[in-house]
Length: 89
Image (cartoon, rainbow, N blue to C red; front, side, top):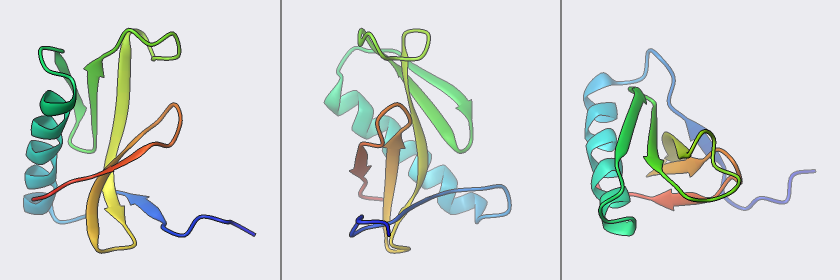
């Protein structure tokens, strides 16, 4: 049984494009606030990365998947450890 109280579901092709663009922009703003001066890398509409000096970062980038928590809150999840950050859109 999964012990998570909140469930993250990432966006997929076919989800509302206008909403995904808004979430992508909000994710960029949030990452620039959390890591000022770090370069953002765009992988696709559903995935975003930012420069990281972490030993566990993928090729020097932390990669975040865009999606929703419990179908109500827009969020991004860091791939390497599952850390979720909620976004205001």
